[in-house]
Length: 219
Image 1 (cartoon, rainbow, N blue to C red):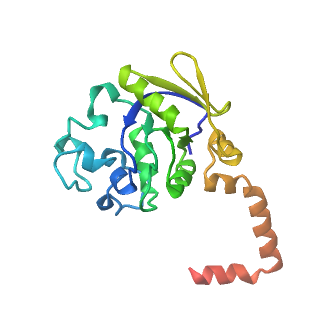
Image 2 (cartoon, one colour):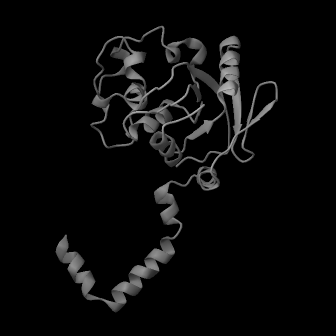
């Protein structure tokens, strides 16, 4: 998993409440269990006019919606998504943070998130930040007013730095913060103990050698 320490990026505004996971990545794209290839279909029903979109169709063959925020030239290359309350509600599909991350987003800022989506973001190297609604309103106003608006997110210090240098503090669970700083997902956390796991397996087979034959026969 990619580490998250300090990230500076262009901000894109998603000025809608209750954006659900089916809007983030529609259900027809969930057939794949691979964790790659979902970025082109992020917000598919809003990004494209030729609907419904289907898996495997190249972006070059799609008809973009010029009114959708991510299709506007001023937000190309955005890596920070500014959203409204209850972002990521709906079904618990992990494909939603996969699609956001593969599009290029490293951080989502909102007044509130759906719990499962919030947890899935951390497990996939993306930082969800909860800020008061009034602070989010301020950031929306600045994004709309200033093309090229960027924020710097310092996870180590737990602050967002605005272009003027003013800092906005945010809270994050200490364990989740450490995992992001170290680039550790669930598998990475387990592999930190690989020597102990190997020693346990060796001791177990030494004391119960018949297990090796049982495992071979079970294949």
